[in-house]
Length: 283
Image (cartoon, rainbow, N blue to C red):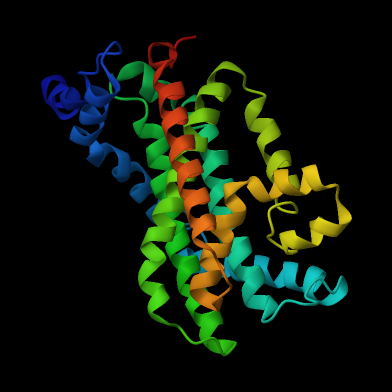
């Protein structure tokens, strides 16, 4: 391939004006949307190609993780008391929480890990956190298939609510992408952020109702702390997944609460991210 041909292949990525409005920026992103999902698709295809089982690990990894946590919390610590069908309840929490933690963790390095690309091509940098978010959703599709298997195997009847699963995943993705935008900019300025994130999520896993219902903090923690924890939209998002697969009660207030905060996080995160567009990739 000649130099001119290589230039033609990437010329569609070289037209981003950092001073443009957010609406114009979104139009540029949409025009280059293929760039956002081609990278995660290739990464997904090649992730386990050097292993014996290949992409079977996309199923084995979440299954093994669920088994370990069920042994610790469901059997040894007896965290299942008062929760019907605890194993499905736990698996839903683990898989949904993993989607957030992985999206944010990879989003934090979406700029810093692609410095060569960022410095050599001009394109909307927001496509990089979007790309990592799409990649994690691809993995999540395998986990959703496991949730259906667990639901049938444990006697849960799948109702019409499953039709709302795309809405819940979309709501979840809005929240995750907003966080990914925020940490991507922060990590570009302070590389310590990517080191701190795993510890933040290690703690959050115990505080948003993944392994233990959040209501148990009502008696164990002071009221201000409990309400602060319950205010986290991730709590409502987990319950929405459980509502679909287990018919766990969810109020319209919970849905509205999660929706408003998720959209707010995305709007703030997007504006925060593109505010430093001109700085990304600079030494």
